[in-house]
Structure formats: C-alpha cells, structure tokens
Length: 199
Image: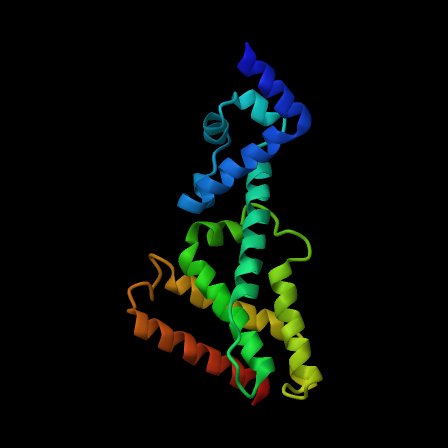
C-alpha cells in the first residue's frame, strides 16, 4: 500500500512524467527510437501502462519527448566542440559545429537517430539549425561569404553534414573506415563546404 501511495504522490507532483521520459531517453540511447516502447518504459519505472498513458497519449507522444531531449543533446555537443585558433574564425566556428554534429552521431548513435526520427515532428525552432544559420550569417557579415550565396545555404550545408553522419554510422557505406580515413573524409567534406560557400 505504501508503494501505491508514493506513486500517486509522484503523479500529482509530475515526477512520474519525468521518470517516464528519463527511462525512454535511456532506452533510445541504447537502441534508438525503435527501442522506445511505452509499456517497456512503464515497466522500467515500475508503474502500470495505464498510469503511463495518463501522461502520454500514445507511443508517438512519448517519442516526441525523447526527440526533444536528443535535439538538445545534439545542440550541446555542437557548442562543446572546440574551435581551432586559426586565421579564419568564421569558418573555424562553422566547421566546429559540423564536427560536433558528426561526433555526436558517432558517440551517441541512438540519440542521433532519435533526434531525427521521422515519425514525430522536429521541435519548432530547432536550436542546432539556428546555430548553423547564425554561423552562416556571420560569414556574410564578415565579408567571407558572398551575400548572394546565403539564401538557403543552411539547408545545403546541413544536408551535406547530415548525409556524411548517416554514411559513417554503423551499417552505413562508410562505417568501416579507419580513424585516419574517417578524419580525411571529414576534412575533404569541410573543404568542399568552404569552397561552395566562399569560392
């Protein structure tokens, strides 16, 4: 009886919602979005599926919460990537964001896949996309990138980097590259982006 009293108190204070999200995030980290199953999340937290459905209308509702977490983790990884001290700070900052993006895909493949799960909408005003847009605006403001090349450039850069990330993930066509080959591929891709933006 004491256990059920605690559960009701947790529900009242919103702790159960957070516990369910935390369990779902952990499942996604290990197995990607396909590992997030509402009944399994409820089992791990120690509540009934009925209790879980009071907080999430369905599986996709829970997956949307996981996607939001994964998107935030991606943004944090992009911001945490060090910017090399070099003569072209605008491009260095842009490429650091890209390396952070790729590093996140490599070290957190489950969350990376959850961040771009196609079954749930991407959170409005994606912070990772905003960072990219701002970096490109700075290139134009500094005169490094012609203003005529700015419209839509964020989409082209994002598609290029995201495509490389997907290729490098386990099971992708470049997933078997050694460390040196992987780094060379990333460097060549970043040179391609630089030429496309500034050449």
